[in-house]
Image 1 (cartoon, rainbow, N blue to C red):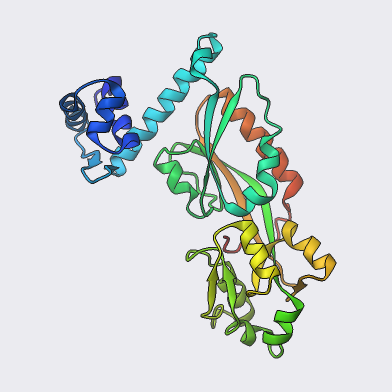
Image 2: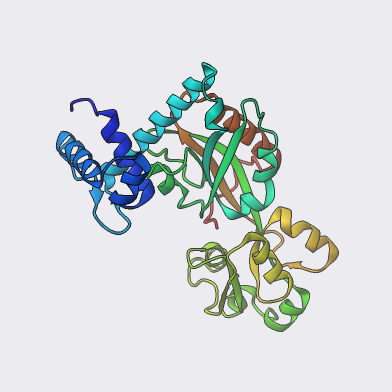
Amino acid sequence: MEELPLDQVRTLLAVVDEGTFDAAAAALHVTPSAVSQRVKALEQRTGRVLLLRTKPVRPTESGEVVVRFARQLARLERDARAELGLASEQGPVRIPIAVNADSLATWFLPALTRVPQDPPICFELHREDESHTTALLREGQVMAAVTSSPDPVAGCTVRRLGLARYRAAATPEFAAAHLTGSLPEDLGVAPTVVFDRRDGLQDAFVRSLTGGRWGAGPTRHLVPTSDGFRDAVAFGLGWGMVPEPQAEPLLRSGRLVELAPTHPMDVPLYWQQWKLDSPALSKVAEVVATAAAEALLTDEGSAPREHR
């Protein structure tokens, strides 16, 4: 394939970021016709459809490759300008990262405070289920992600961070009212707190107790924040899998009881990032790896499970 003209590549990125050809034209200070011509020329050059002309527009699988290239190109240019002392007027270096809600609520934010701010770094966090954060990497929306997948996205490296442990918990009052017989059978009908409709952690826990015969009960309260999830369990709305750092103080105080003390669930977490020689991204990666080693478990013998 011939080399990709940079003006066409940047134009495609502008269209994806702005959502429409007209908005991209305004951002680039050119006419909508010029934007359309550049995108068509790039599609002809690559021999592929790069954009779905929806509202907003969406990149095709081939378009995602070009968009990711455009973002990486912009990052390399930004880093080069910084090393040459030419980037001061552009503000801090922006690092977009995808991270799951539980990591965000426990160990990840304190880790970011350790990142050296010379030059200044601006974090743009995208909260997403860690089984879906790799999609943001593939689309080029983020430079790095905390994910449960050990398989690197094309153009990315992967590093194991450790194991996040979850405890099945409920209030003593909830347990007395709903969990009085066989625990696996009771959990199959008792009200459950889930993070969102994609949260399979409670089902996975019950399946692990029942040999896969059934999952959690049909009454499911959706609470889509990590702290809100913990509070919903602590207020007795239902039972749920609570991250160990959030569960421990509530278990010690007696506000929660653990339903299966010998049966925690350990979830592997990985750090994936672009293969990019970016000093800022490298600094973030090292700090995150160090913080994860302190906050997460490292027992390789623990079985990987589903994760929120």
